[in-house]
Image (cartoon, rainbow, N blue to C red):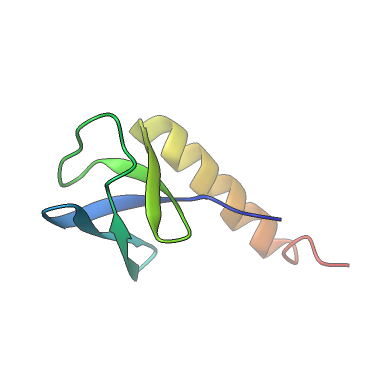
Length: 77
């Protein structure tokens, strides 16, 4: 199973961004995005690439769902 994680862009340098969620930072390439992004935007990160821009409401809803799943045992039986 593959996951895309919503993260907020903290810095941009060319086609690379540093993105963060819950204090965890990752570098991600922006080269696959069709839409322009800016610091503060939310993007969906998969395998080191930002694959789509998200509006803040959708990003927060997904983050909240991930947090709830983890709090309930992470979906692992």
